[in-house]
Every structure is written in structure tokens, then in C-alpha cells.
Length: 359
Image (cartoon, rainbow, N blue to C red; front, top):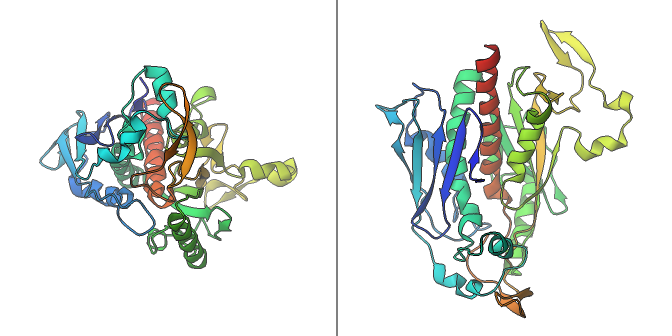
């Protein structure tokens, strides 16, 4: 029931962490869009495991295959199906989890809901499910970039207490990809990497913040009341594994300002309505106002740690569990393309809705 996302540009992801593969079906992609695997692979490479010393060592090439929906390098307007084969699955590492619930994972809640669960790497609850999201997001980003002039960038701004200083209006993709933690502040990035490596050696994990900006979004995208643009962005971000918080514009920090200080005054500039400040984060009344959209997503420390912890088994008896398997000590570096993908899926859906309703 909860495996599909979007209205006009709708995706359905499928697959489990240690099954045969994972993938996505996109319905509603406009026809005649030039599209090959080469358009999608770069984002999957940024998401894949084993890419650096501060992420899980699981080795997956994550080579995407387009199975349907294109012909001679262009989309047909029919459903696009893509899949990625699982090549380095090691389900035996999770055998103890067959009878014990991992703390802060979805093991117990899935068992309570369905009465059955795939305990091999978390099955459907694993971050491996996001392969399909990132693949679909790459298509959405291409539409936004080529048809609407919208560019989306995400980057790490904080790991635990190590915070970066970043100019969101000037940050570039090259700066973000200049280091393995994907933080464009070089000094902060070095400290973040050292912290994550220290956590990995200690068998522990750490969380932090990712900020995302969308530049070039015109005024008018979004819907009144229930389908507000920021509401859809919030749902998209909080659907990501390990996400625990979402704030847009001034966010929670806005409570420290007065109404006069917080208001974004309007001025005409170069023939268009602009705002002097952007505490609204580019969205007012649930509809984009033409300024840069920006928001932040909080990710918790990864739940699997290489320490013994208290838990309960499937017979509902108290016991302990030793963390095993291959896991990220910090999800943030690999979550950057996931955040971009979900932002793109929301924005392309609203772009198509706006074009269909208002031309």
C-alpha cells in the first residue's frame, strides 16, 4: 500500500536488501525525453555502498538497467521499469536477527504489523530500497533541468556537533563532491571525516544534517491546503530511512525572530517580484514564490552498532544482541543523493500538475 509516491509523476519501488535485486517503476514520465542508463548511473554511483572508508564496505556495482519505457534512447510515455541486481548479499550475517529484534530498527514493528518479516539485512526496510528512488530521481532531475531550468543540490551541513559554514546561494556540485563526506566546507569536512572514522573504529555511529537547495523554481508551483509544496517535501524527506526531522526556511530557528524581522519584504527587481530576505525558504502559502527553495533534514545515528545491546526475541523474552554485518557508521554521505532524488520527485510532480492545470 505504501510503496508508491507521487500523483502525475508516480513511482513504485520494489525489492529487498538481500533478494535478487531492487528497482522502480515510473509512471507518468513525459514522452520524447532523451534517456539512457548513462543519465541515471552517476547518481547511483553517489549512493552506492563501498565508495569510501566512511560508508558500509558492502560491494555493489549498482549498475542500472532500463527494462521498459524507452525506445531508441527516448522515453515513450509508457511505464519505465529499472532494476539493479544485488551482487554482494550475505544473508548469513543476519542469522541471529531471525529470532531477535534489532534495537531501533523496524524488525519488531514489521512483525507486529504483518506477522512476518524478511530478517536478511532488514529486507524492505533497508536503505537499499532507496536505489529505486535515486534512479527515478535522476529522471526527475533531468526533466526539471532540461524542461524547467531547475537545479537541485544537497550537501552535509553538520555531523553531530561539527557544523559547516556554507553559502547556499553559491555552493556548487564540484564543491560538494570534492570530499567523501559531501560537505563543501573543507575545514569542517576534515573534522567530520575524522569523527565518522572514530565512530566506525569504536563500533558506534553518528548522525547529522543535510541541507538541500532548489534553484530556478518559478512562482506558482504547489497546491493549496493539503498538497502544499512544503508539506509534500516534508513527507518525502521523512519517508527516507533514518530521517528524524524536517525544517524549511528559517525552520525552528524562526521562533527567535519577531514577525517584523521574519517577514520577507517584496520588491520589484529586473521586472519580477523578489523578496529582500528568504526566511520562507522559497515557499509561501504552500506555493513557490520564485526564490531559492531550501530545507534541512535531520538523520539519526545508524541503528546498527557493533556492540552488544539489550533486546527482545520473537518469543517475547528479554535477551541481548550483538551487532553484525556491514553498515554505515554515518548515513549522511550516501543520503545526499537520496535527498536530492526525493526533492526532485516532489518538484517534478508539482511542475507537471501546474503545467496541466494552468498551462
